[in-house]
Image (cartoon, rainbow, N blue to C red; front, side, top):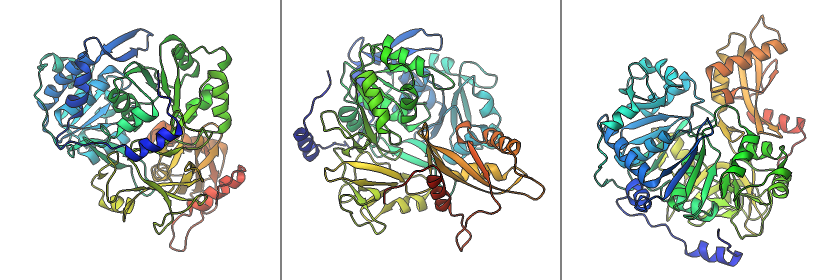
Length: 548
């Protein structure tokens, strides 16, 4: 059974809740191995592409991760970066757990990455090891000679010139000494899209995600040791670390993994909810929008009791359609790659469809103006997390090797999220949009710079500006405004050619679904493209307005 807090309980929890961080802490040893002491306790129910299911215990995962730790420490030193690009295979969880144990810094990447994306990430992180599967070996091979830091290649399966993952584990010991790393030592790096350059590296330490996600698992997912939790997330996104790694396993819950590849399968997803005893469920808003188009009236979830969503605001009509069809609210939450859950609607609280919720325990959050002054109810501003006098546990360390970006985000006593919202009289937050130009499409964060750079590589394009355009299904889609080179004429055929070009040189989810040809782009007096004007035009064109 889940929690059934009343609003008065939440006020007391918020007032008294504290996360304790020991000086030395290794989550694999101090948390995961404790659950592994229970013989037969299931950590994961995994369903393969062939539909076969198998249970994986905490004890087996712990033992396998100790072999991974020994194998990888034979190839690298503590603090080295390990680029991990695997689909939803059990080995992904083994590798991440092994990296934690071995004090190696994991750098997860989605299998949607192109060779160009892979090279950028390996070089930026100075990764010394790459781990992938046979389906993705060719992409790494295409750029390995362009990655001077990369010394070791490990494949799940077999590939010429690569070390076999299973062979490495077979020759590694199942015993690994108690790690003595500091809680402040580096743990993981995720890449997050920016507006003025390539993706930034978000560095977390051994406390921020591992301990900080106690908040996520306990209060939002509402997990307990009898739960089976399912998160719809690619392994390359921070959401995987959030809600199908640290948060549920902190609470001793098992996770459900379906190794579904390719496009999202709504009917298959509903079939899984009926077939397996999944009790708690996370999906991004785009998935919920597609799921409610199915015949939910026939859905009979086997054990579902609690549903959550995050990534972008959910339309109230989608929330209501899910509630009518499935019988459960979608409890929304807010956080970033840089944070753990920090705002949410929690079980037992008054429910306000479309709101992100209230401030999570362990955080102090306000809406601030451009000068950093707190704004009252009903006033729109930037979501800011207080960092002084006490820094929240679940906040990232820095943008690694990017002091300028770090300094611009940490101002005075605040971490500025770059997201705009307003707060009502009851303390509920309502999302407005990005303060910068990052596009959030189907929960993917897409930096316009990457797409613009790809477009101007095409000989037909002189200039390009990319913004998010409102879309009922995806929240936003990527729209490109293009100025053509002399000798080229606007046409549907050219638009399709440019779309295919972007798909080839960037990850497929980044391509512009709409292209508009222009004589010139709006610019500031200093020559900077005025994306805000293009965004406003799109909002007006599609009949959307922002709260002001």
